[in-house]
Structures are given as C-alpha cells and as structure tokens.
Image: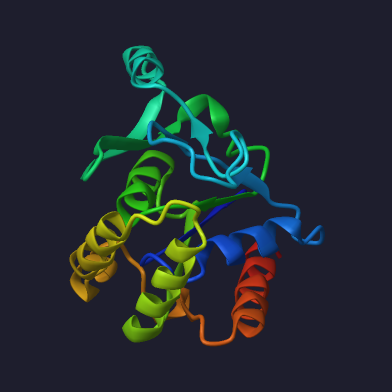
Length: 197
C-alpha cells in the first residue's frame, strides 16, 4: 500500500524546513503533495513549489468540476484566503507523497483516502520558542505582517488542542518534538522508512 505522509503543526514549528529536508532525501523517494491557495504569493515563494497559487475564479471552476477534495477558508486581516487539495494532483496508488498543511486538511484527506493511507507527522515546539521564531521569520519577510502572524499564533491553540489531535487520531507515536531540527528529521525519516518497509 502507498501512503501519504502529512506534516502538520502550529505555525513556526519548523514544518517547512522539515518538509524540504524530507523531500530532498532521495532515499525516501517522496513526491510533494502541493496544496492550492488563493492567498497572495509571499516574497521568496515560487508558484508550484510551496503551493499552486490560483485565483478565486480558478478555485470555483475546480470546485464545480468536483476536483476539490477538501478546502479551508480563513478570514484574514486581508480578506478570505482558501487552501485546498485538488483530486487530480494525487495518484495515491502509484506514489508515496509528502504533504504539509493544517489539521483540517489532514482530516479532509484522511476522510477521502482512508485513515490507513494518511500517516500524520505532528511537529511540536514549546510555545515561547515558537513565538520568537514567528517574529524572526516575519521580520525577514520583506513586508512584516505582525497582525496576521498574531492571529495565526493565537488561533493555533484552538486549532491544535489536545482534544482535536486525539479526535484526528494523532497519538504520541505521530508527534515529533522539534527541539533539535536534525534529530527531529532523523526520527521522522526512521518512521517513514518503517512504513515503506
């Protein structure tokens, strides 16, 4: 059976760094599962690398054709932004995938493909360290948006509550502490290799 390994966790927990390192590991042979989004591209992002950046009209066309597996809409300080998965992007019988996103997107994929095929990778970092990382990342962004950063940080407590993680089937064996990035990646890599057999 082929799997979709799905990284999730609170903002500024190191998900992007872990995602890139695992995709670059040729021994793992993972294909990226890219989400689509209607939010504007940030400085340093590339269309088709971090996300497929699309218009609201494109989203509506894909939805009307039944191509959207799951979608989340966030009311940001800049207006609504959608993040969604497109069915035609996933050939789950042919490849092993690595995705990254929210707990809601993980649950949507699990509902669509079955819980035995979606393997969660939940990244944890102490909240104080996460806040410092978020501020430092925002400073480097070219156009810091501290209001949006704070909104995400605060909403993470509710979005990733222990109750919601348990509901989503994310037990201790799927939780990885990112105190030391290299060790965290090594631990996740070992789990993936175990699943691939």
